[in-house]
Image 1: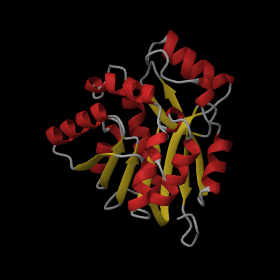
Image 2: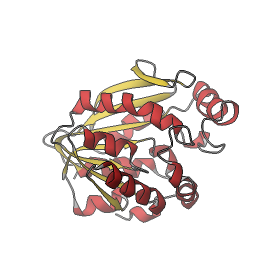
Image 3: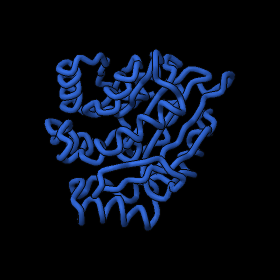
Image 4: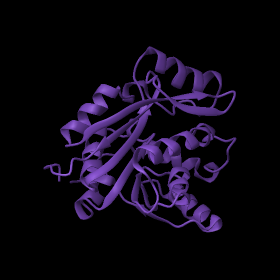
Length: 240
């Protein structure tokens, strides 16, 4: 499987350009800082973190990876943006948190570490790759039978366009303009279908409500904008 082709160089450059500000809670990645506690709580509640071997796909500067490690997980974080990975490594070193960061595509890693992880996470990343279904296939291969996969992304509908693109990028300027492309946003039904095609079963679907002025996020039943999906790989299947 050649994961190197399933990447948009413009996306890598965009995130690398802002890498030095990844851990600034008031910078370009402010929404991720605000979303992170709710995301972590959801992952821990649905799949557990203590002593689990976890892979964070599209880890960027390490916000989620470090958070999971602090909750007792043995975390590997992968990304294709070298600048973001360097920031992640330096921050983990300074914070005294152990995370194994690697520059490799999920599709490539799946060839050598099939079924190696108890939990695989892929948050706010699928909407930035040309073929997200291939990434989901790799996630299914990387998790062990009986293990968990958690993804989050943005729905594709008029409300999501108004809130996540027009509102967040152009009106409130929470994100740089052009961060998201509407055509690449993903409906929950599409993501669920890709998971099933890869041999995963949908265990849960939840919304992620974000209130930018209050700088708080919470898990909810409203999946119309941001949402999380929890897959489980059956204990006996042929997805590998």
